[in-house]
Length: 381
Image 1 (cartoon, rainbow, N blue to C red):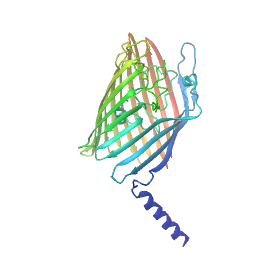
Image 2 (image 1 turned 90 degrees about the vertical axis):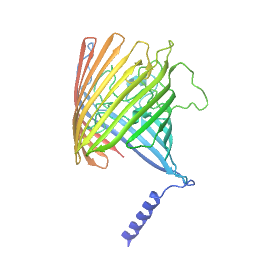
Image 3 (image 1 turned 120 degrees about the vertical axis):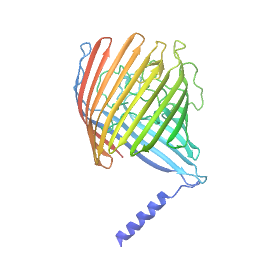
Image 4 (image 1 turned 135 degrees about the vertical axis):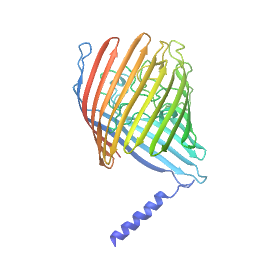
């Protein structure tokens, strides 16, 4: 009798949760998150007599995800997506009073979705970022393109083919419905938040601007993004492809700094557990490895990546490569990055992985090498 009552109660609860929300009903709230950590042994070259740690415990992708969504009487789907980031390990941010304690919202936006497509408004990644395909990830929580874990002491060059010009800044985005496998996305960011004087987007994220207007001509503004991607299957081969273009206006401290721009494309092919993927990226007048600070020094960057992954049951293995050539006026900086490894799913969002990395920098005739091997633990909840 007890088992029958429990089963009936569970069935009623399941029906209630699966029923569509009405206009008078509150949106359904779900809470989840993820964390990626592990232990690495590192063999890195010294720089100007300074040696660096030979073991490392990274603590990354530490997010709490809060989502609310419901279907209204008119058929529209409304929702809020909030990503709470638990501290950080950017030591440079500590000098800015942004220590690695506490938490802040990395992304926070609202959206409406229907037959017309989807509108997003708030602090989040733009269409160019969200619609991009690249080399596959096979190590849990970490990949060679826009990695969560990179065992190098300095960030000289970019390590991503993703559009990062206006990532996480307040913006409005529209995605069309998907027609015959194709979808178009458009984003507009009035002003990009950056840490003043820094080459990294340490201050990115949702900002208020509810009562005040931001000063003009003091950073990157009026960023427009356009992206087109395709998802479909031909003869048993899964195909994903995209192309994107972003452009903004740049005025920073000393006056006109040029108009930063990015463009790129990506391709994924999947068949019988194999995924072959790659991407190409090009930018002009953007300073720094990750930043959105414009530059009048004629900076340009070319980055490409390629990789192969195989997945069967709980196992995943793969190899990937990323290459960057960044020109800073007359100084050429290059980076070559290899990753080999795999992962095993233990169940319930728990994955173990083996991560082997090799990075080589070439800057003004100077070579720097870093090699590492790590055991990764990634948990999603």
